[in-house]
Length: 278
Length: 288
Image (cartoon, rainbow over all chains, first blue to last red):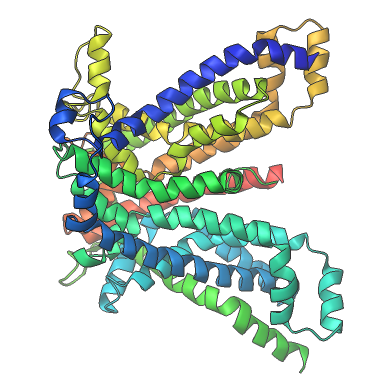
């Protein structure tokens, strides 16, 4: 009966959904389009497809405007960030779930409090401390700061995952003489694959898009990440660099959109996971 | 090895690295922010202790109150617009069997984009020379509006861009909630003669109570923290009219050389966000 009702309303639902989809995509269509047009063509007709696809602007932005450098810097922040956060999250969660270390509940709660601390709460002293240590402009320092700002949720996620692994498994392996590291590597990690993948994807997104931390901590022009370099293209509120902004948007968004489409399910459940816990 | 030494060794290996970094990057700077908020300091020279003066100044600062007003506007509109649209879309999605995944992907793309990209994309949309928003308005018989340049429209314009990055999130949250409603309940309602409207208000809405709660609190927290999109679209201008606490704090601490005052602003922001985060965690706990 419900199926019959659904079939009846399906077509009208599709029409409305397509309309919403078009409205959603429209700003991206306009922007990405500009990457392949001349500014002259953009001024005469902003909505139409480019008359001749030109890759000149993309090339200019990538080479002359330093996007290749910004891209590399972003990669050099994102990769250490993911590696370090995976190691620390795994060690910490394993420690509090399996090792019965005294007061681990307290440590977990304290780390969870980080959930509530906005980055604005720490950014001012952090800037002066890192300046004193000569660590501003260090991409590695930036990735580690990012690790700590995002680790509360990762630990929260992996811990609840590990709590579902039967304790008898752990005990059997220990009796067989396995060390903690063997156990983590051979049993715990394979069993937590789904949670780890969620963390990787989520942190790729968070670190790739991070803005305020690099804005404050990376002062040197050569050290900027993509979002920073990109925002400099703007040149004032009423920009005239239309095609460059189009090209910059394309370079910034394509890696993100590809990863998103490849791991759509994980992505959505990971991001929604902060709000809905299953 | 006795149990105590083993515990200490395990603590040192598994927990300590995170705990140390956490104290260095979170706890120490957090306390330091509160400490700095009692000083007048330009970032280089001598700090002079001034007690609660920064906080007193905040209470009398018209830009602070403008920022609060904008934060509140962000809260209200990020609750109403994206949740309303998300609810409609999720109900439509639950009506169809084919293509659900593709539609969800499309609506979710703005969620994963960097807010800098979003700012520049919407900057182009509102652009007074080429912006499609005004072109469409004119075609529909309206008048061109100076969206980002006019203090009256600027916040609304930025919030709409922000909504664009958030309604897809609301959609998937609502959709998950809708899918957990048993088909049999809806079928029973149909047999009892309940029409579409009745089913919507008597079954669907009450069953989405948890999702509504979570999204409301999420919007509140997100609206207090909002920074990237405003900073990149208007720098809080024109003349502070789109300022929020986070952009004002950045301006005072990092551009205006008033580190103590900036710290006081950030202390206020932390207290507010912390308070709502506790409510958020409590709601999550109740759900679990």
